[in-house]
Length: 247
Image 1 (cartoon, rainbow, N blue to C red):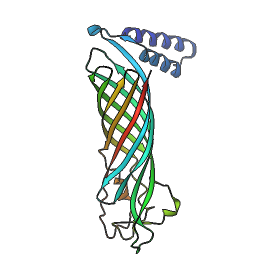
Image 2 (cartoon, rainbow, N blue to C red):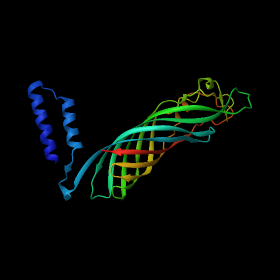
Image 3 (cartoon, helix red, strand yellow):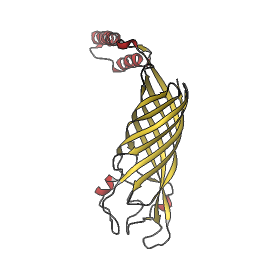
Image 4 (spheres, rainbow, N blue to C red):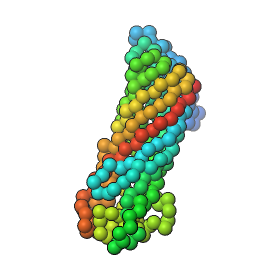
């Protein structure tokens, strides 16, 4: 199979070089992807490798575990795509996927600096996540245990209610709700979960934990941390419940 892929790329390369002296990158990419998404016959062990495509969506529970603030997890939603490499005679599958989500989180604050009235400030956060997961086939075609690494790019915290921009955050004297929106936007996560169903439809549950400090960027913002800790540390957690359709 490797030889076939090599020959296909070589033919395209020779054709484009002779006519334009440049490689047509889109055509070359299409050729490589066609080789990838079709059913292949592996040479060693004569394993039949099947590549699949899936669409999934679900609801999320998002929170940031931190000693700096009092938080309350919020609901959200998620959707994404994945490509799966399946070797039926092996005990695992591998998938590569990307998902987009909108997550909500509440952080306890107060309307003004000296107020004794506590109220949760409502934030939302958009995130794009790319993951490579290993799926252990506990029951062939029906139940898998899933885990692997995930890279994340997320936006800043955004207010769901603009009237809360001037609120003050509890545990600090002068720290405002606006001050803590500029969180770290590149993060590394770990994923563990399970999938249950039939070959083309599965229910999925997964837990995502942020290994990196999502509040780290706040330490470079020269914030007034009077009354609380000047060191900001927080790890995101996300629980996802959803469903996946495979093709």
